[in-house]
Amino acid sequence: MPTTVRMAALWAGVLLAAAGSTVALLAVRPAGANGEPPRVVVISPGGGARQIAGALAEGGVIRSRWAFLALAALRGDLRLLKPGEYEFTMPATLPEVEAKVAEGRTVVHLVTFPEGFAVREVAARLGAEGLADPDRLGIAGWSWGGYLTLLLHGMHPDRFRVGVAGVPVGDYALGYEDLSPLLQAYDRALLGGTPAEVPQLMAERSPISYVDDVKAPILFLAGEADSRCPLRQVLAYTDRLAARNHPHELYLFPTGHAPFQIDERINQTGVVVDFLARHVPGIRVPG
Image (cartoon, rainbow, N blue to C red; front, side, top):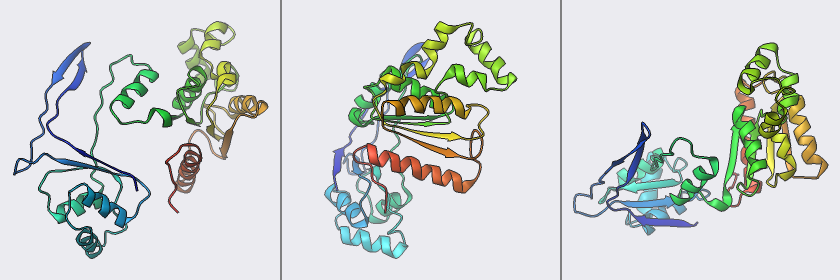
Protein backbone atom coordinates (compact mmCIF):
# COMPACT_ATOMS: atom_id res chain seq x y z
CA MET A 1 0.00 0.00 0.00
CA PRO A 2 1.54 3.34 -1.01
CA THR A 3 2.45 5.31 2.04
CA THR A 4 3.88 8.78 2.28
CA VAL A 5 5.84 9.62 5.39
CA ARG A 6 6.86 13.16 6.14
CA MET A 7 8.60 14.78 9.06
CA ALA A 8 6.79 17.85 10.31
CA ALA A 9 8.78 20.49 12.21
CA LEU A 10 7.99 24.10 13.03
CA TRP A 11 5.68 25.77 10.60
CA ALA A 12 4.42 29.26 9.96
CA GLY A 13 2.60 31.32 7.41
CA VAL A 14 -1.13 31.08 8.07
CA LEU A 15 -2.76 33.90 6.16
CA LEU A 16 -6.06 35.39 7.13
CA ALA A 17 -8.03 37.74 4.91
CA ALA A 18 -9.96 40.36 6.84
CA ALA A 19 -11.58 43.60 5.74
CA GLY A 20 -9.76 43.51 2.44
CA SER A 21 -6.31 43.25 4.02
CA THR A 22 -3.95 40.36 4.66
CA VAL A 23 -2.95 39.57 8.22
CA ALA A 24 0.00 37.26 8.84
CA LEU A 25 -0.36 34.90 11.78
CA LEU A 26 2.68 33.00 13.04
CA ALA A 27 1.80 29.61 14.48
CA VAL A 28 4.49 27.51 16.15
CA ARG A 29 4.07 23.78 16.59
CA PRO A 30 6.02 22.58 19.64
CA ALA A 31 8.35 19.64 19.49
CA GLY A 32 7.91 16.57 21.67
CA ALA A 33 9.17 16.28 25.23
CA ASN A 34 12.59 15.13 24.03
CA GLY A 35 12.87 17.80 21.36
CA GLU A 36 11.87 15.43 18.55
CA PRO A 37 9.56 17.03 15.98
CA PRO A 38 6.11 15.55 15.35
CA ARG A 39 5.82 12.84 12.74
CA VAL A 40 3.18 12.74 10.04
CA VAL A 41 2.10 9.48 8.45
CA VAL A 42 -0.32 9.37 5.53
CA ILE A 43 -2.18 6.06 5.29
CA SER A 44 -3.80 5.47 1.92
CA PRO A 45 -7.31 4.00 1.68
CA GLY A 46 -7.92 0.41 0.69
CA GLY A 47 -5.63 -1.40 3.09
CA GLY A 48 -6.45 -3.49 6.13
CA ALA A 49 -5.20 -3.44 9.69
CA ARG A 50 -1.87 -5.05 8.79
CA GLN A 51 -1.13 -2.42 6.15
CA ILE A 52 -2.00 0.37 8.59
CA ALA A 53 0.25 -1.13 11.25
CA GLY A 54 3.03 -1.46 8.67
CA ALA A 55 2.71 2.19 7.66
CA LEU A 56 2.96 3.31 11.29
CA ALA A 57 6.02 1.15 11.83
CA GLU A 58 7.62 2.36 8.60
CA GLY A 59 7.03 5.93 9.72
CA GLY A 60 8.80 5.31 13.01
CA VAL A 61 5.70 5.97 15.09
CA ILE A 62 5.49 2.46 16.58
CA ARG A 63 8.19 -0.15 17.14
CA SER A 64 6.16 -3.31 16.66
CA ARG A 65 3.33 -3.69 14.20
CA TRP A 66 2.34 -6.93 15.93
CA ALA A 67 1.99 -5.22 19.31
CA PHE A 68 -0.18 -2.58 17.61
CA LEU A 69 -2.41 -5.24 16.06
CA ALA A 70 -2.66 -7.13 19.33
CA LEU A 71 -3.79 -3.99 21.15
CA ALA A 72 -6.32 -3.16 18.43
CA ALA A 73 -7.71 -6.69 18.65
CA LEU A 74 -7.91 -6.49 22.44
CA ARG A 75 -9.84 -3.24 22.20
CA GLY A 76 -12.10 -4.55 19.42
CA ASP A 77 -10.80 -1.90 17.01
CA LEU A 78 -9.38 -4.00 14.15
CA ARG A 79 -12.24 -3.06 11.83
CA LEU A 80 -12.31 0.56 13.05
CA LEU A 81 -8.77 1.55 12.02
CA LYS A 82 -9.06 4.35 9.48
CA PRO A 83 -6.88 5.70 6.66
CA GLY A 84 -5.90 9.34 6.53
CA GLU A 85 -3.16 11.77 7.48
CA TYR A 86 -2.09 11.52 11.11
CA GLU A 87 0.30 13.60 13.17
CA PHE A 88 1.95 12.16 16.27
CA THR A 89 3.82 14.07 18.95
CA MET A 90 6.88 12.00 19.74
CA PRO A 91 7.44 9.95 21.72
CA ALA A 92 3.92 8.55 21.36
CA THR A 93 2.70 5.59 23.40
CA LEU A 94 1.18 2.59 21.67
CA PRO A 95 -2.27 3.13 23.27
CA GLU A 96 -2.25 6.77 22.13
CA VAL A 97 -1.40 5.83 18.56
CA GLU A 98 -3.99 3.05 18.40
CA ALA A 99 -6.74 5.27 19.81
CA LYS A 100 -6.01 8.09 17.38
CA VAL A 101 -6.15 5.81 14.33
CA ALA A 102 -9.23 3.94 15.55
CA GLU A 103 -11.07 7.21 16.18
CA GLY A 104 -9.92 8.71 12.89
CA ARG A 105 -8.41 11.86 14.43
CA THR A 106 -6.73 12.94 11.22
CA VAL A 107 -4.94 16.19 10.44
CA VAL A 108 -7.25 19.04 9.42
CA HIS A 109 -5.79 21.45 6.86
CA LEU A 110 -7.09 25.02 6.95
CA VAL A 111 -6.74 26.90 3.69
CA THR A 112 -7.84 30.51 3.25
CA PHE A 113 -9.18 31.65 -0.12
CA PRO A 114 -9.32 35.39 -0.69
CA GLU A 115 -12.75 36.71 -1.62
CA GLY A 116 -13.17 36.77 -5.36
CA PHE A 117 -11.03 33.71 -6.13
CA ALA A 118 -12.23 31.92 -9.27
CA VAL A 119 -12.68 28.15 -9.18
CA ARG A 120 -9.52 27.62 -11.23
CA GLU A 121 -7.61 29.68 -8.65
CA VAL A 122 -9.07 27.61 -5.82
CA ALA A 123 -8.00 24.43 -7.62
CA ALA A 124 -4.50 25.82 -8.13
CA ARG A 125 -4.21 26.77 -4.44
CA LEU A 126 -5.31 23.30 -3.31
CA GLY A 127 -2.76 21.74 -5.63
CA ALA A 128 -0.01 24.04 -4.36
CA GLU A 129 -0.88 23.08 -0.77
CA GLY A 130 -0.60 19.40 -1.64
CA LEU A 131 -4.26 18.83 -0.82
CA ALA A 132 -5.40 17.96 -4.32
CA ASP A 133 -3.97 16.16 -7.32
CA PRO A 134 -4.39 18.43 -10.38
CA ASP A 135 -4.72 15.35 -12.58
CA ARG A 136 -7.54 13.84 -10.48
CA LEU A 137 -9.66 16.88 -9.71
CA GLY A 138 -13.42 16.58 -9.84
CA ILE A 139 -16.21 18.97 -9.04
CA ALA A 140 -19.61 18.17 -7.57
CA GLY A 141 -22.59 20.08 -6.28
CA TRP A 142 -26.31 19.95 -5.66
CA SER A 143 -28.96 22.44 -6.76
CA TRP A 144 -27.10 25.73 -7.31
CA GLY A 145 -23.91 23.73 -6.88
CA GLY A 146 -25.11 21.37 -9.60
CA TYR A 147 -25.65 24.37 -11.87
CA LEU A 148 -22.09 25.55 -11.19
CA THR A 149 -20.76 22.05 -11.80
CA LEU A 150 -22.22 22.00 -15.31
CA LEU A 151 -21.25 25.59 -16.03
CA LEU A 152 -17.63 25.00 -15.03
CA HIS A 153 -17.35 21.76 -17.00
CA GLY A 154 -18.42 23.66 -20.10
CA MET A 155 -16.38 26.81 -19.52
CA HIS A 156 -13.24 25.03 -18.28
CA PRO A 157 -13.44 21.60 -19.96
CA ASP A 158 -9.79 20.73 -19.35
CA ARG A 159 -9.77 21.54 -15.63
CA PHE A 160 -11.74 18.63 -14.14
CA ARG A 161 -11.54 14.88 -14.63
CA VAL A 162 -15.09 14.11 -13.53
CA GLY A 163 -18.30 15.81 -12.40
CA VAL A 164 -21.32 15.03 -10.25
CA ALA A 165 -24.34 17.28 -10.78
CA GLY A 166 -27.15 16.76 -8.29
CA VAL A 167 -30.56 18.29 -9.13
CA PRO A 168 -28.83 20.84 -11.37
CA VAL A 169 -29.91 23.59 -13.72
CA GLY A 170 -28.69 22.62 -17.17
CA ASP A 171 -30.89 24.76 -19.41
CA TYR A 172 -31.70 27.97 -17.56
CA ALA A 173 -34.30 29.29 -20.02
CA LEU A 174 -36.18 26.00 -20.28
CA GLY A 175 -36.09 25.59 -16.53
CA TYR A 176 -37.63 29.03 -16.09
CA GLU A 177 -40.66 27.94 -18.10
CA ASP A 178 -41.44 25.13 -15.63
CA LEU A 179 -40.92 27.09 -12.41
CA SER A 180 -43.68 28.30 -10.10
CA PRO A 181 -44.58 32.02 -10.39
CA LEU A 182 -42.75 32.71 -7.12
CA LEU A 183 -39.50 31.13 -8.34
CA GLN A 184 -39.87 32.84 -11.72
CA ALA A 185 -40.03 36.17 -9.88
CA TYR A 186 -36.87 35.23 -7.99
CA ASP A 187 -35.04 34.48 -11.26
CA ARG A 188 -36.21 37.77 -12.80
CA ALA A 189 -34.78 39.59 -9.79
CA LEU A 190 -31.45 37.80 -10.24
CA LEU A 191 -31.22 38.31 -13.99
CA GLY A 192 -32.96 41.65 -14.40
CA GLY A 193 -35.73 40.24 -16.57
CA THR A 194 -37.14 37.11 -18.15
CA PRO A 195 -34.88 34.91 -20.30
CA ALA A 196 -36.49 36.42 -23.38
CA GLU A 197 -35.78 39.94 -22.12
CA VAL A 198 -32.09 39.30 -21.37
CA PRO A 199 -31.08 36.76 -24.07
CA GLN A 200 -27.37 37.60 -24.10
CA LEU A 201 -27.05 37.29 -20.34
CA MET A 202 -29.08 34.08 -20.41
CA ALA A 203 -26.78 32.61 -23.06
CA GLU A 204 -23.71 33.52 -21.02
CA ARG A 205 -25.05 32.06 -17.76
CA SER A 206 -26.79 28.91 -19.00
CA PRO A 207 -24.72 25.68 -18.90
CA ILE A 208 -26.36 24.35 -22.05
CA SER A 209 -24.61 27.08 -24.04
CA TYR A 210 -21.34 25.26 -23.39
CA VAL A 211 -22.54 21.65 -23.38
CA ASP A 212 -20.76 20.74 -26.61
CA ASP A 213 -17.42 21.68 -25.02
CA VAL A 214 -17.76 19.31 -22.05
CA LYS A 215 -15.01 16.67 -21.98
CA ALA A 216 -15.28 14.92 -18.61
CA PRO A 217 -17.82 12.23 -17.72
CA ILE A 218 -20.68 13.56 -15.59
CA LEU A 219 -23.13 11.87 -13.28
CA PHE A 220 -26.58 13.48 -12.99
CA LEU A 221 -28.97 12.91 -10.09
CA ALA A 222 -32.41 14.38 -10.62
CA GLY A 223 -35.79 14.26 -8.92
CA GLU A 224 -38.73 13.32 -11.10
CA ALA A 225 -41.02 15.67 -9.14
CA ASP A 226 -38.53 18.53 -8.66
CA SER A 227 -40.24 21.93 -8.80
CA ARG A 228 -37.08 23.97 -8.15
CA CYS A 229 -34.80 22.48 -10.80
CA PRO A 230 -37.40 20.81 -13.04
CA LEU A 231 -36.55 17.56 -14.74
CA ARG A 232 -37.29 18.66 -18.31
CA GLN A 233 -34.37 21.07 -18.47
CA VAL A 234 -32.00 18.43 -17.02
CA LEU A 235 -33.07 15.99 -19.74
CA ALA A 236 -32.53 18.67 -22.40
CA TYR A 237 -28.91 18.89 -21.24
CA THR A 238 -28.33 15.14 -21.05
CA ASP A 239 -29.94 14.70 -24.47
CA ARG A 240 -27.29 17.01 -25.91
CA LEU A 241 -24.57 14.89 -24.36
CA ALA A 242 -26.20 11.70 -25.64
CA ALA A 243 -26.43 13.14 -29.16
CA ARG A 244 -22.64 13.12 -29.40
CA ASN A 245 -22.18 9.92 -27.35
CA HIS A 246 -20.49 11.76 -24.52
CA PRO A 247 -20.05 9.60 -21.39
CA HIS A 248 -22.59 10.46 -18.74
CA GLU A 249 -25.02 8.75 -16.42
CA LEU A 250 -28.47 9.80 -15.24
CA TYR A 251 -29.90 8.63 -11.92
CA LEU A 252 -33.56 9.49 -11.32
CA PHE A 253 -35.32 9.32 -7.97
CA PRO A 254 -39.10 9.64 -7.54
CA THR A 255 -39.32 12.61 -5.16
CA GLY A 256 -38.66 16.32 -5.50
CA HIS A 257 -35.64 18.53 -5.00
CA ALA A 258 -34.11 16.27 -2.33
CA PRO A 259 -34.83 12.80 -1.01
CA PHE A 260 -35.74 12.59 2.66
CA GLN A 261 -35.78 8.78 2.87
CA ILE A 262 -32.62 7.49 4.54
CA ASP A 263 -32.45 4.43 2.27
CA GLU A 264 -32.57 6.63 -0.81
CA ARG A 265 -29.82 8.89 0.50
CA ILE A 266 -27.64 5.88 1.22
CA ASN A 267 -28.33 4.51 -2.25
CA GLN A 268 -27.40 7.81 -3.89
CA THR A 269 -24.13 7.94 -1.97
CA GLY A 270 -23.32 4.48 -3.32
CA VAL A 271 -24.13 5.60 -6.86
CA VAL A 272 -21.81 8.59 -6.55
CA VAL A 273 -18.93 6.62 -5.02
CA ASP A 274 -19.24 3.88 -7.65
CA PHE A 275 -19.21 6.47 -10.44
CA LEU A 276 -16.11 8.17 -9.05
CA ALA A 277 -14.34 4.84 -8.61
CA ARG A 278 -14.87 4.06 -12.28
CA HIS A 279 -13.56 7.39 -13.53
CA VAL A 280 -10.93 8.61 -11.08
CA PRO A 281 -7.73 6.57 -10.67
CA GLY A 282 -6.98 5.52 -7.12
CA ILE A 283 -10.55 5.49 -5.81
CA ARG A 284 -11.71 2.05 -4.74
CA VAL A 285 -15.08 0.91 -3.44
CA PRO A 286 -14.71 -1.38 -0.42
CA GLY A 287 -15.92 -4.88 -1.16
